[in-house]
Image 1 (spheres, helix red, strand yellow):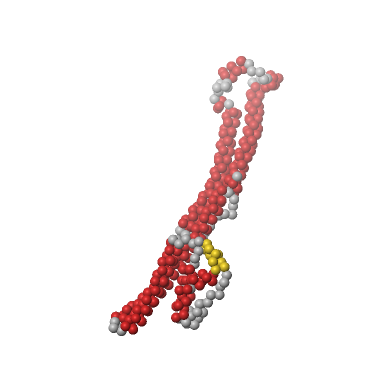
Image 2: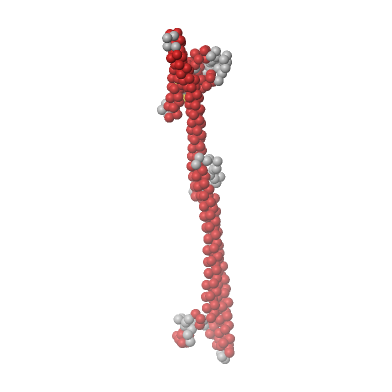
Length: 322
């Protein structure tokens, strides 16, 4: 059973077995001691009776016969009752029996107090260690709740409680991995949105400038046509950025479900950078696609690849290769 694999419970059971053996041993030792003590007191009682009979002139033969006699007569029973030494006699009328009773009670009390003290110490040590284990587990679980996974539950022992600790550790590891993944996803989303917001400033500023130019020269058809085309390009750029932001938001909320499909990597990359070829050409930059292998991908990565390529293209100077 897993209960007996627990080191602390195993130690406590060994203590109880040792305590039981000690209890039996002390009981046997006390019994032997009391029997010997009773023999000594009985001998002292016989010696006192013989001495008294000799002093009152009883013959040795009569005394010897009396002590070897095993038969009880009514006369003898009546004589003891008349002298106050019968069955109902008080304990103080029998000094040797009184002494034996007192010594027995004293020894039994001392033995019981010793055994109870040993049992109390063993139980205190067991429950104290158990309490420390529970307090340690409580502190670690509190840290887990607060997002701190630097401390860990003890797992180097066998037993039911440590199996539970191991399961909790596995759960904590999964939660930590999930939290780190979510944190990285949030940071990516934050950086991407920040980058898109920064990129939106350029077409917005251009639109404001084009509008001002058109307002200042409304009669110049050539100027209006030229800057109207530029406004269209800026609006298209803004549309692409906003759509990319919407796609990222849908990805983050889980509204897009990916499906595994086998596709050619070169075709996927070509589709991702298709919208950037015109921009690269206008900026005198080239995008090369040298891949020609198959790969199994989890769904379409067009949006993410497009944004990544956009970031690379943005940070390249004129004449660079991507």
